[in-house]
Amino acid sequence: MRDRSRHALDDASHRPSRARVTGAHGILAAGVLVCCAIVVAPGCTRKAEIRGPLPIDTSSTAPPDKSTALPPAFQDTTGIMIRVTSPTALDLVTSPLVVRGEARGPWFFEASFPVKLVDDLHYTIAVVPAQAKGDWMTPYLVPFEATLTFTTSAKIGTVVFEKSNPSGLPENADSVEVPVRFRIKS
Image 1 (cartoon, rainbow, N blue to C red):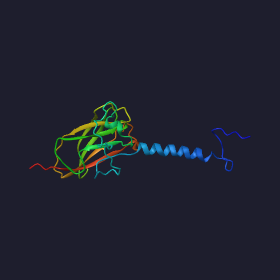
Image 2 (cartoon, one colour):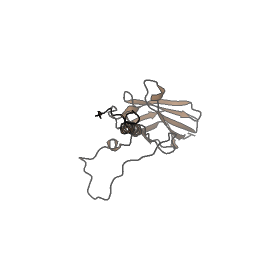
Image 3 (cartoon, rainbow, N blue to C red):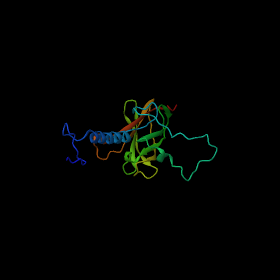
Image 4 (cartoon, rainbow, N blue to C red):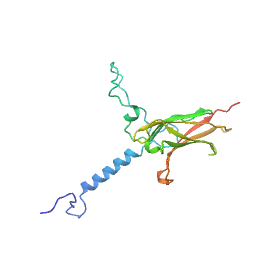
């Protein structure tokens, strides 16, 4: 009688059974899908799916039960890594420029990540750290904010939200870019 333990072999090929291989690949694929989505505003250079807040049922006249309601960051289970709320694509901006949004804990290192403002020729105009506005050591979305002070004669530019990468390894690098227009002061 054959032993059908967790290391069971397929009778025909003497390989691990197909169910085990498929199951392992299914778990790996699910993990990759959950960990890799990034959401940014329309018009940004990152190709990602745009998602807003979860729909709220407004058909009920009863007020929401605040004792069981979760904060927006905890409602999001889609694997979004960063959500930029300000500026949006092609906004007309001036100095000082306040950038806001939410990012998951792994986007931060020591509660911050770099935000750059570059012009149309990719010259860096300003660089500041975006600071987490809450506990950043979490898998959930954490609000962030940064203020960029700058002067430029360019008409267009890009705000670059870079994932903190203390290792410097390219496989750990990531960024989201939001194109903006500069208001020329006369």
